[in-house]
Every structure is written in structure tokens, then in C-alpha cells.
View 1 (cartoon, rainbow, N blue to C red):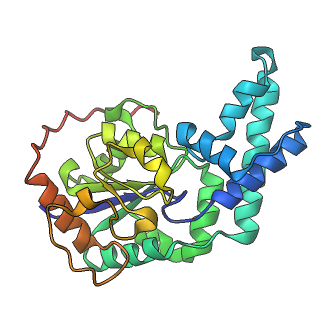
View 2 (view 1 turned 90 degrees about the horizontal axis):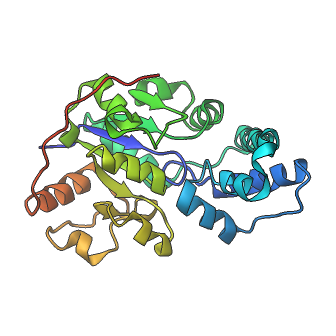
Length: 264
């Protein structure tokens, strides 16, 4: 049963956006008059819990009282504004591993979808910077502002599956954020964690595979049931099909829950 669809996150999967998020968070703190500057480690700590797009929400809860909801909203809006400014002018580079996987998947007839919590304006700027007008023929579905806390049947991954009429068990979700991976896992999809940071792997323990920056798996257990000739240091669709097939022989495939209509 080959893979017919890959869903890809933007942050940490397609693009290295950590610098952009760190700069925009600190610029927002300064703009809102907060005497605070995050380090990379502080950003990553917030990201592990909330995901990179919503990391600053942790600071809004710590810095503002309930009566200051207007100031909290302003901080989030400023962060989004500065982030868009960064990506529109500097355009974070496309990850080499993801670029190769995209080309390989399209050549094999596999469909691609983008699923991200990133605001539409910034996500569009990133994708257009990397792919130009070709993005419209490359990605079958693009979901932005994704609500990863939605019930699984009404979540962003099931929306993609219903839109493309592809069976749940012919899909793989690739993300680098805990919330995105959790949402894909709750929907029943086979998942790959692409986070490059080893200390974050325990947060993705339910992911079927860990491939930092989409390099070949480095966890021995990930490859214990199959033999893959490493012709490339980056993951390919053939690698994914082989690994997933080997793992499926040792697991019971759950029944697919009945789909429900997504509410706006």
C-alpha cells in the first residue's frame, strides 16, 4: 500500500524559520515596551509546548493580566507583523532535504499538501519566495492558520484527506512541531518528526520516525525492521514506503474513524 499523499509543515520542515521567529518575538517585545529578550533556548522551550508559530502566547499569559487582553493581542499581532516583514524581505532558505523529497514525491505521482498554523499572509510569502507561481501546481492543498486543537475528525489533516479523497492509510504527515505532530497522530496518520534537535525527540515519542532535517533516520530502532541502501543522505519517498511497510508488518492497523464535516 504505497504512499499517495505527504502533508508538510513549513516551520522546520520546508524552511529553517527559527531565526525569523526569534527576531520577530524580540522585536515585538521591544515594540510593546517589554524589557525582555528571548535567547534561542528560551524560544525553543516555548516552542516545545506551543509550537513555533504560537510560542509567544506563553509570554502573553505570563506578562499580561486577564484585563490586559488588548495588550496581549497587540503583542501577538506585532510578532506576526515582524515575522512577515522578515520572511518577505529575507526569505528563509528551503531545506535541501525537503526540496529533494518534494521533487522525488512529485516525480512518483505522490500528492503534496501544506498544513501549518502559520498565518496565511506569511505562509504565502514563504511559499511564493521559494517556488514562485509553480507552487499552485506543486501543492494540491494548502491549509494555513491550522487549528491543531480541533477534534481529529474536524482537524486540518482530515480536511486535506476529504478534499483529495485519499485514504487515511496512504498518507504520511511530516512536521517539526509538537502540536502539528500531535494533531496528525490524533487523526490517525503515520507521522515523521523532522525536528533537528535531539533533546526534543522525547516530545515526539508517538511519531513513527525521527528524521532530523529529513535526513535518513538516526534512531537504530527506526531501521531495525528493514534494510535500506543509503544512496542519499536525505529521505526519499522510496525510503518512506520501505520503512512504513516494514513497521506495518509488526503493527495492527486501526480502523478508520468515520469522517465528519468540518465546521468553519
